[in-house]
Image (cartoon, rainbow, N blue to C red; front, side, top):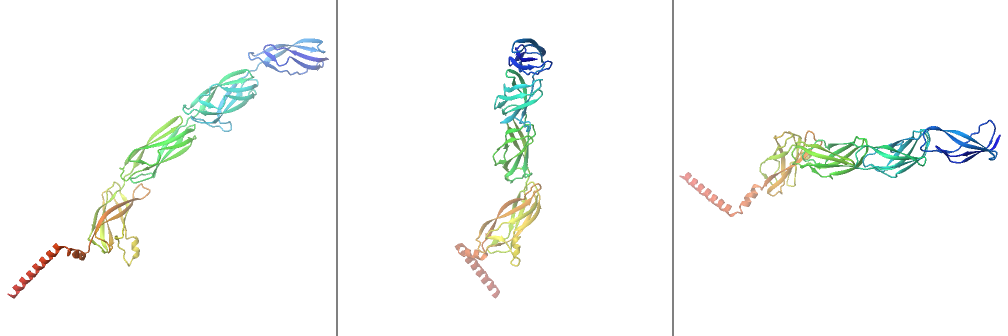
Amino acid sequence: ELSNVTLLLHSIYPVQFEESNVSVGYLPPGQPVPITVYANVMKNATEAVYTIPIIVTYFGDTASEPAFVKVPVNGYVNFSIQALWGTTSHPLSASPGSSSLPLTFIIKDVGLVDATNVTLNIVNSYPLLVSQKSIGIGIIPAGEYNEGSITASVYSNITPGTYFIPIKVNYFGDTSLTEYVPIIISGPKLAVNLVTIPPQIFPGFYDIRLEGVVVNYGTGIAENTSVSISVQPPLELISPNNISLGAIATGGVVNSTFLINVHNNTPAGSYTVYITVNYDGGSLMKPFSVKVYPKAYLDIVGVHYSSLTSGASQVPITLTIKNEGNATAYNVRAILGQSDVIYPYVSSSNPLSALTASESSLGDISPGQEVNVTYIIDVSSGASSGIYPMSVTLVWNQTGSLIPFAQSDSFNVMVSPPLLSQIGKDFSNPITIIIIVVLAIIIIVLALVALRRRKK
């Protein structure tokens, strides 16, 4: 039996012991006693089995024996690093202009020994702006994973693609290697379409909605997206020409609304509208054709009536309506405007006729066709002689229009003074009096001549 046993350890290539002597104590005969010591393997060691000499002392250092320990060095350390936007439980995608996104590095020890004191150092971060250059990982058991995250942003002017960033891996305190880690910058792909509301546009339509529909069918987020519109005369843009849409996620659809007016004198035809979409890393411009459909134009080309005098009643007045446009007006209705002087006749025996006295149905009017409409009117007894303006509102439908058309046309009528009033007025004229006296004398002379002939 041996007592007071101590192991004297001396560092020799490639093993460097962390302590120089280890107390074993009592060593019974014929029985092995396991002793654990800590040592480092020099980084320039090669794989082999090394014989390391040690000295065993016992009986209080009164005796000693040399011994040899075979130490196999057959392990190595290597790493595999992957980068993932977001986290392992919530992955994301990054595109040009992405800001403050989590970036997770997943590192695996593909060697045969555990790696300790592992840190990652980002040597060159382009095209990223990172919150920190160093990431502490700690221990990675052989064949296992560990991970660390930072916050990163992507330059807005880069091209989407895969970028390799050099990462220096430090381990074991003084050992390092460099890995090039792929960083995927996804690219948005945008498409734009234009929709008009209403679907068919006619002259005289106002506040027409032009809906720019932007779709991101790419693999990255479109950052800082904006859409603008350019229209050509005679179309009139009445809303701002640029709208900010912000970020559009993958698969996202965003609408932008612009307003235009198409004035009543706008010729029918197709007009080009340009939609431009700008976003970080790219832009898109696409022309669209906006069609203005032909419209019926109804005009009063004739006004027919007998003499109108103050107090006249049940006087027919006929209007000739002509379609001078290039489209058929369907289900035309003509509504006569009225005033305190001239208004539709209403029978006292049928007062309800007042509801329809001013309205007439003209049916369909084709381009170039003329249609007559007759109203029965009364003239106020207090009406002064003169010319009075009147109006007719024409309402009709057209193929393709969701709303009816309305147009107001004006015409003039003349109110003459009554006959007795005219005669009375003429007597105040001296020339008229002289003419009447002369006519009276002539009549008297002719009467006397006729009388004398009868007496003979």
